[in-house]
Amino acid sequence: MNYTTRKQVDGQFDEVVERTISALEDEGFGVLCDIDVQATFAKKLDEEFSQYRILGACNPQLAYQGLGAEIELGALLPCNVVVYEAEDGSVVVSAVDPAQLVGITDNPDLDSIAEDVSERFERVLESL
Image 1: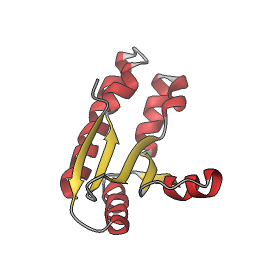
Image 2: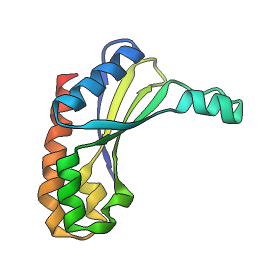
Image 3: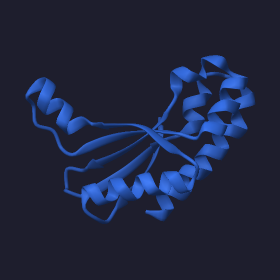
Image 4: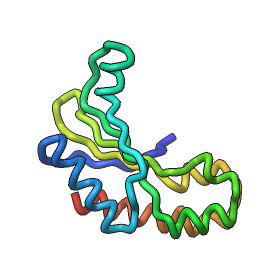
């Protein structure tokens, strides 16, 4: 099952993270959390890991609409966008597929919201 959409992006890792955050903001998303997986694994596990950031993206208006249609939807929010260093050294940006995410709710009232989020994420990836 394909549950993300992704793009290999040119640039240095930190610069790609910043460009991704900016592109999300341009599409109405705020980044509610920014998890540095590499730093967390180093600190908590004393293990090395490649550069990997999880950005918890949320569009307040769309979240409001979604929660109005499905109160338990909050368990699936925010939508995650990841930026990571691939094995070949390239940088990849990957976003959750909102249709797959909300599809588990079996609530057709969320379909238009998922479509809107998908289109916004596609524009984010295209802009990178």
